[in-house]
Length: 203
Length: 194
Image 1 (tube, rainbow over the protein chains, first blue to last red):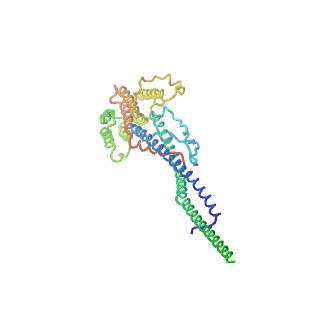
Image 2 (cartoon, each protein chain N blue to C red; image 1 turned 90 degrees about the vertical axis):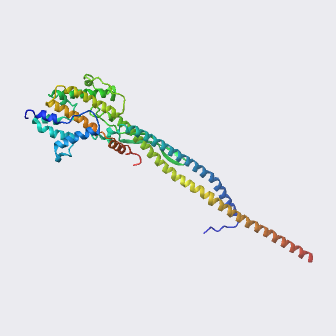
């Protein structure tokens, strides 16, 4: 049920203040929406580039990947992630992680006992793991930004479609009502004045 | 060991060419499976060969043959073997590994004892890690061919045959599909967010 509007000057002043606030908040949310949209697009592009680079590297590796079927070698141990270092960055009020560096556990391989291909495998696995980690970070960031983007959109739409038009409508109603009251008062005053003048004349 | 048994055994072994074609692989595997009989067909190629060869060898010779392991062939116990073929090949393999090491590790990590080794003159041609592995196997194969001269129907010939078979078996195990599957499993196992 819609709130009952008090048809007085105080209500009118309050509503006018509210409208002013809504109208100044709208561009803020519009700008926030734009910023977040741009940030999401940029992260999506960055993921696309990383995926492309992973694919290129995979195709290059495919030419010699057969050696990795050698079971005497534990591939998992070649590049075990020890720590992922990230920095914080703020985009339109959202704190996101920015990849800084990745530490792999030091693998002590006896080069005399390990096959030659292990060096190349270690390099390519570390590189791919780094890229997959970067993608994970960016995906997590996109999730955070999308949540905030949805909130900004909701607010923008609520202001644009509901709060501002409704407040304008209420203001219009009160202004019409107050105008009518004022005209009625003037009419009454004129009538009273006329009656008084008539009475004076008859006396 | 009956006289003539080694001749019989060695003559009955399939010829080993240096290559990775499916035909050669199938032919050799089928021959050894046939020799081993239906009960042993699940065994690995090297095991099948040993099963067949040891039937014709004295216990001591059988032990020597079974002990051969390509992954450990460069170890001191093989380099110092009384068998000249084993010792020569093991020393060559050790030298080859050290020569490769020179390219793999920083100079400061290169041990003093390695510098005194007689390193076979070779240079790995540019190529993928797979091509380089094949180059190394080919060098080992060539060494075995050199060592084979003068050994036709003796234990040394059988030793050379087994090492060649181990080299081929390693090469034949290189499988693109399996390697790619293992590679994919490893790279997608990422740390962040867990």
